[in-house]
Image 1: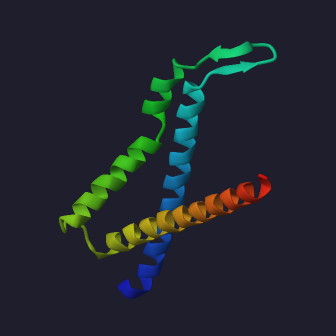
Image 2: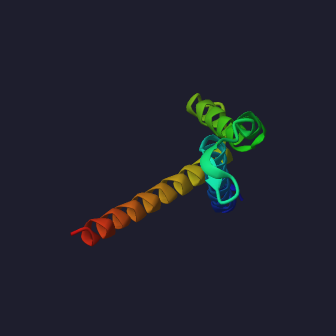
Amino acid sequence: MQMLLLPVFILAGFMGGGLLATQLMRWGLLLWVAMTKHGGDFLGAPRRRLLWAVPVGALLHPAPYLLVVVVIALYRESQGAMGGPFICVLVGLCGYLATAGLATLKGFRRRRQRLGRAQP
């Protein structure tokens, strides 16, 4: 029975990796937007920042807490404190992060090659 559930646990970890990666990207973008200067037609020259939103975004967003949970789980797993199904969840999570990272690097490489060809 456990052998039949292992792919389900790996799939759950893969989906959890998708959630973690998405939340981390949203958190990073939120902090970047809060720290950069804002301007526009009605605001004038770029000189305003949303610095008041940085602590709110840094502390109330779920991404840092999800990351802490994953790091603690990986540490506990390295110490041998977790069971078999949890290893499959971590394998799926790390598999998603590795796949997404490689796809992102491939996209950046293609973009750099396109920009290199466009310049005279």
